[in-house]
Amino acid sequence: MADKSIKITVENIFKIFGSNPDSVMDQVRAGASKSELLEKTGHVIGIRDVSLKIPAGETFVIMGLSGSGKSTLIRHFNRLIEPTAGKIIIDDVNVMNLGEAALREFRRNKISMVFQRFALLPHKTVLENVIYGLVIAGMKKAAAIVHGMEQIDLVGLNGFENHYPNQLSGGMQQRVGLARALATDAEILLMDEAFSALDPLIRNDMQDQLKELQARLHKTIVFITHDLDEALRIGDTIAILKDGELRQVGSGAEILLNPADDYVERFVRDVNRARIVTIGSIARPAAQLACSKVTAASCKKLLTTQEAIIVTEAGKPKNIISREFFARYGSAGLKSKKSETDDVACINQSATLEESFSMLANSDEMAVVIDEGSKPVGVITPKVVLKAMARC
Ligand SMILES: Nc1ncnc2c1ncn2[C@@H]1O[C@H](COP(=O)(O)OP(=O)(O)OP(=O)(O)O)[C@@H](O)[C@H]1O
Ligand SMILES: [Mg+2]
Image (tube, rainbow, N blue to C red; front, top):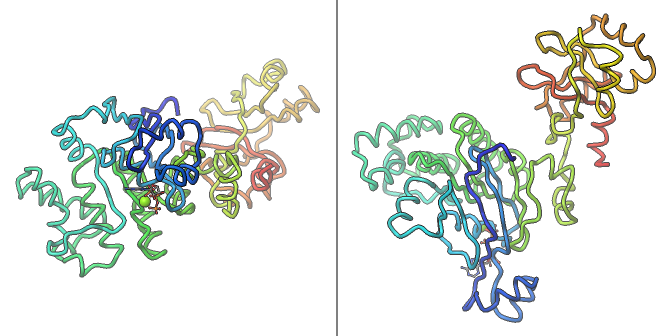
């Protein structure tokens, strides 16, 4: 994550609901549990000491059961909620320090929100709903219509611009909500359970559409859900909340393969990891060696902790020298490896474990893991795949 630019930084946010939150902060900091605090003081812990770094251009999912603090957390981002302690920094701006006018400007231009229950204006058409915020913000109507139609096109609602919300299905209404949020050109989209009210099939469609849009637009999307499948499907990074506390942050594969605690473990137990975990996330590192550089000396040096991939001068994978192979056959083995003409088995890093099964079943040895440009990024063996499936 270090090389990605960070869009939103959440620093030690606490949110306590009740008559005098400051008076109970010492107890919260000392570790009082949510139920204990409620019983003793009547205060509710919404968020407890959450820190996060959300990279620009990512779909960042915040997941947790009902009451875990998801909505409370993201409402801090545009200061619909003030924290009891801590701060939010967006693009180097401390959101806590924004005055009234600056905050209005910030909410209008920087952040858009998509809600669970669409929140469309019933007496306005699709187009009028989409451009409503633009016109209020002072854009000329003709320009707003052109811009609004582009967004309607983006979400696939062409031809419905003059319909009213009650003439649309739930999924279509949610598309209008999305188009309206996109219309402001905000760099950050906050989506609070945006798809939760939809039927499963329509929900899947919306998830696909969001992924497609995101591949084109590269917004910073903070997406809230209590549904693990949805989180795994659309999230580049997933943060898991419980009782207002952050339990784990990581990619879907990281969370599935290394759950941070018993709670996360129970949460992810029933997920079919073969369909989620990608080969790239479990590939082992390998050195690359141009064919002309394959010598006993170079191999001896390289093959201490990793395997080696022989590549053509153009960088295409040609063969693999495993540590085990070199230990067993030495220089004589290298000669035969260099002269082998069969194509080495290659598998794309974005393939899921399930998609790799048939290929690995048909290859006795290691396969090369390649990126989208067919450049090698590591190696994989059937055993490593099985281990990831068995989580050992
Ligand atoms: N205005 C409020 N006053 C008192 N308590 C609140 C308030 N808003 C939220 N809470 C409490 O804070 C905790 C977190 O609530 P929040 O709405 O953020 O949960 P959530 O994860 O979004 O849940 P859901 O999935 O049901 O939307 C809950 O215990 C809730 O009761
Ligand atoms: Mg909520």
